[in-house]
Amino acid sequence: MDSSDWGANRLGAPIAPGTTSSLTLTVGFYDILIQDGWGGKLYEKYDTPIGSDPNYRNVALDAEFEFYLQNNFAADVCVIKVKPAGGSSWQVLNNAADNITPGNRISFKLLPGIYAVQVYRCVTVLLVNWPDKYFGPAVAGYNVP
View 1 (cartoon, rainbow, N blue to C red):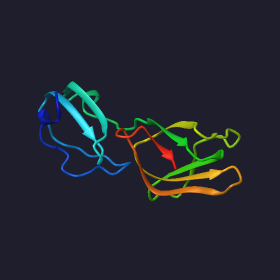
View 2: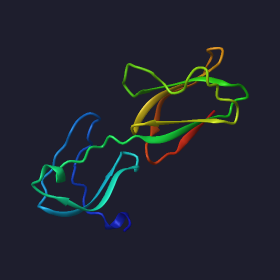
View 3: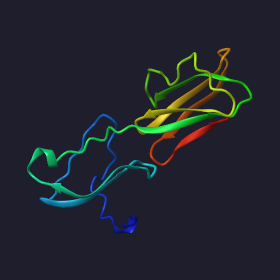
View 4: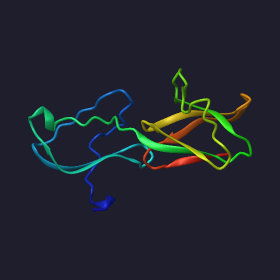
């Protein structure tokens, strides 16, 4: 199956993080594709039963995807922070004692979305400040810088 085989978009409007959306379908078996706004596949399943049983009526999109950031600086990187766009709390992705040496990468998991990213040298110097970076199934990771 390719993208031309999928039917019409049944959602009609984007679903904001942390919210729910519903639509009415006739009982039956469906092929389901849910994508983010950048073409990344968040959920894809074929011959899915949709019916009156609650087990066949809900899809929770809470899957984390694995990403990487690769240190292409000539110096060690000690701290990488992310926060969801519009969020107020930073999440540190690495243990401060685990320096990321030049040419190496850190792997981590996040829910798909737009994040602010900050990368620091070991002397607490801010090296990178990306206000809006997309993390989702359409990307594997980013090189810094």
